Amino acid sequence: MGQATRTTKLVLDLGERGQGGANTGKRTHLTETVALLTAARAFYIDFFLTHADKLAERVSYYSAKHLEMRERAISANELLTWAEACTVATKDHPHPWPSWNFSERFPDLPFAYRRSVIKDAIGKVRSYLSNRANWEKSGKKKGKPGLPGASEHPTLYQGTCELSLEGTKVADRFVRLKVYDGKRWQWVNYPVTCSRYFQQRHRDPAWEQHSPLLVLYKQTAALHFPQTKQVQAKKVKESRLDPDLVTVAVDLNVKNLAVITVRQHQQIMETLFVTDHGLDQQRYRCIKRIAKKQWLSGKPVAGERSNQQMWRHVRRMNADAAHQVAHRIAAVCAKYPGCVLLFERLRKIKPRGASTSRRVNRRQANQLRGKINQAAREKAYALGVVTVETNAHGTSQFCSRCGARGERFSIRGGVRIAERWGKLFRCPVCHYEANADHNASVNVHHSFYQEWHWQPRLKRSG
Ligand SMILES: [Zn+2]
Image (tube, rainbow, N blue to C red; front, side, top):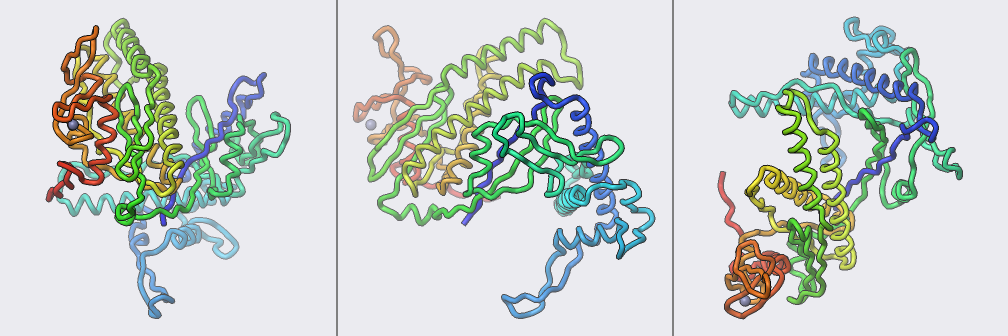
C-alpha cells in the first residue's frame, strides 16, 4: 500500500487588465500578504528555536494495541496548541508570554494563516534540529546546517480561500482569497485562467484534495493543489515469480528520447519509439545564441543572472518534453495492468565535444533524461505500476538475441562504417542487425531477469 502524489495548478490571471486580469492593487495585496506571513513564520521559528527542549519532549499515552502506557515524541498538533497557548491572547489565556506576544505583533491575523505558519515553523525547526544533531554526531567541521529561513509558499487552509468554478461564464470563475492590503485583512476576488483539464483533475474522485499553496513569483501567481491517491501495488519480488509477468523497458537517449519495449513470455510484444522532434537541435541553437549574446556583452556581472529569458525557455522546453514522454510511457503501462516498469540506472552521456555549447547541450540532455525518469516513475505509480532500476552494464554493447558482444555502425552512402556512435547495431556471432537503441531497450529486460552476463551487482560496503 503506498501513496501517489501529484500537483494540480490553477494560475491566477495577472494579465492585461482589459483582458480580464487582476488589477495592480490586487497584485500588491498578494505580495504584502506573503511578506506578512513570512514575518509571522520568522516569529514562530525564533520561538521554537528558543524553546527547542519542548520539541524534544516525550509524552506518555495509553496504547490500545499493546494495552500499556507508552512514550512517544510530542506531535505537531500538540506543539501547535502549546505554542498558541503561549503566544496568543484568548479568553482562556488572556496574558501570553510578554516577550512572545503574537497577538500584539500581528493583530487580526486570521487563525487559519496563524496555524499554517506555526505548522511550517515546526517542520522547519524540527528538520534543522535533526540535521544539526546528525552533523554534530558526524564530527565533521564543514557543512554545519544553517538556521532555517522563513520564506515559504503559504498554505491556504479552509477559511482563507474559496474557489468557485460553477459559473458558466468564464468571467464568473474566480477564487476568493483572504489577503492583507497593508492595513487590514479582507476577502478579494481574483480571476483565474481555468481550463477544462484543471477541472477534470480537480474533481477527480480518485484523488484526495489537500489545502492549496499560494505560489507567488515575480510575474506569476498560482494556486498549487496537492493531491494524493492510495495505491495498491505488488512488491517486485512477488511480481518476479509470476510467469505471465509483463515488463515494460525504457531506454532513454538523446535523439530517441525513449525507446519503450514490452515483453511477456520471453517475447517482445510491442515497441514504441518516442523521438524528440528536433528538441536537441532546437536547444543547441538556443544555447549557442546565449553564448553569442554573452560574448557580445562581455564578462558576466558577478551575482547577476544573464540571459534569464532564454534559459527559462530552455528549462521549459525540457520540462515539457519530460512530461510528454513520461505520459507516453505511462500510457503503455496502463495497457498492461500489473506490469513492471524498467529503467536502467542512469549512466551519464559524457559531455565531451568540440564546442562549449555542445557540451552544455549534452548536460541539458542528461538532465532531461533524469526528468523523464522521475516523471514516468510518478505517473506509473499512480497506475499501480512499480518501477525497477536495473544494472546498466553494457546494454548498448551486447546483442539482445544471443548475448555476444557486438558493434555499432552506420550506413553512409551505401557503405557500412563501424563507429561507436552509430545508429545501428550488428552482432558478429548471430548476424543480428537492429536499431542500436531498440537493442539496448531489449537488453534492459535481460538485465531485469538476470539473463546471460547481467548478474545482480555485488553490494559495495561503505
Ligand atoms: Zn547475436
